[in-house]
Length: 228
Image (cartoon, rainbow, N blue to C red; front, side, top):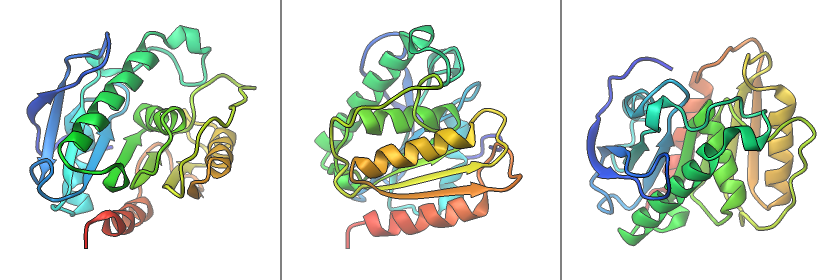
């Protein structure tokens, strides 16, 4: 990810529980509810909302409202997403609660879930994937740039809900230093079993970043979500 150039007007605060409750939410694009579609953007480790909002001018869909919450201290949870879950609490639980409160706020503003895209990069992509798994519904889309479901090697995921055709995009390098390729495939399989329309793309030698192909796919997804 590049350094911030996007909008960063913090006019909301997150709900949920500690440690991430009450953190600012940076906004971009159309006023909430006015454009009829929203994207909740979850930044990576050692970053802040301005980093993920760098994508706003690149995505070039000003009709969307972009909401980017901040992790307290720059990290949603302290250890690798492949660590034992207990080692990452209460960070994971607080982060998921924060996203749920933010989704509820967007829905209350008049944007239905099927017009909300959840997008994250790196640690944010893992958190985005985990939220979609634990709070399944028909969303406008789920986009995970370099991430996957949270849990140590050998984790099994019980199918307890349906994504009802939600488009899911998983993009990652075949040699990402943080995300094993196998976990991307595991995540794709679980989401398919939950009824999502999954697109998983592994990019040879890409590294830990977002590439042009991923941006093009995301733009096409956003065009499908916008009201006619």
